[in-house]
Image (cartoon, rainbow, N blue to C red; front, side):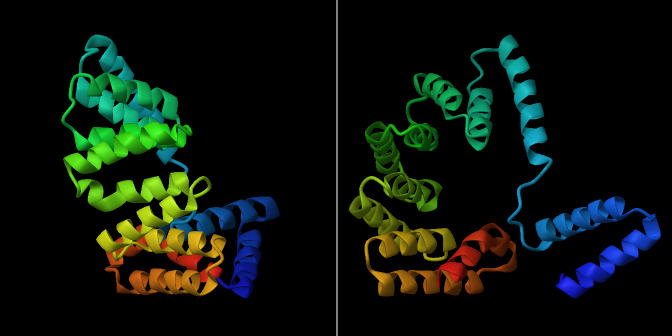
Length: 224
């Protein structure tokens, strides 16, 4: 929405409501809905409420059936989304003691450790998951490892990102993170190329995939 149309819209809403504060609130709500619908960078206002509600229900069910591993796994993933990695880690470790052949569970448990700064343990667990299933989550483990090591071991992070990019050539996030690391490493031309590849990848995506990758494409455009 262009500035003039925003101003006109605000004036119209003010005239309709008779109150500038109500008009501003309505305009902000409209802009938020449009941004969520067509851009998708702003956070969902209802998602945290739905997560807490579901988590509360799972805990009630676990109180009746404390050995239900599927519920524990679901709760752990919701806790990861809420960035409560310590709680998620405890649940996942409990499940892994009983189900030790799941690459997916190892990935989640590794993410919790990486997010808490336990890099060596998280890396080992992630590599175990990849050994069990090299295609687990379509290469995402390499992206998470690169993210974790970006500020601690740049060469290792670059290696993981390059592996990820070879597996997921359509990932804007992978190219963007690669560009950021290359820029930090003093390789501006290679960084610029990575940002260009992020934009090229975004343009080639089908419409349904563009929403999830739009944030990284916009960031890549800004970096260029």
